[in-house]
Amino acid sequence: MLTLEMKDTIDEVVMKHGSKQSSIITILQEIQGNYRYLPEEVLEYIANKMDITPSKIYGIATFYENFSLEPKGKYVIKICDGTACHVRKSIPILNALHKELGLSKDKQTTDDLMFTVETVSCLGACGLAPVLNINEKVYGKMTPESTVELLNKLREEI
Image (cartoon, rainbow, N blue to C red; front, top):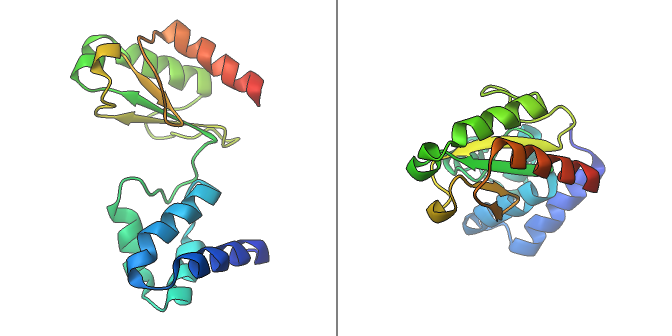
């Protein structure tokens, strides 16, 4: 359910970028930046605000990989499973993340919305394999042990 505060935020973003259809992606990016995902009721509100169909907004939000309809954690951890990382044992790191955070292939975000773990095909840092990316910061030459240490440091910052 949309709160008055959410409506005000969305109204502000739409006003800032304009309600032209060419602004939809920019608006969705900014809204997702605020909430870490795009709730269904937000998509419907944006559609009404911009006088376009909800199916068009939903189509855009589901077409682009960077948009998420599911809540994501404060820390989004992307683990590379491309060839270089896979060969250098990224799967044990993924298993350590899942075990430490109580996650699985089907459950990617912790209940407290602090951590989301995603597997990606390549992070473009093959020379540092195996690689993690946490909120756009790259961590190379990781091991299961160094990954758990990094998680503990992040937990201390909270």
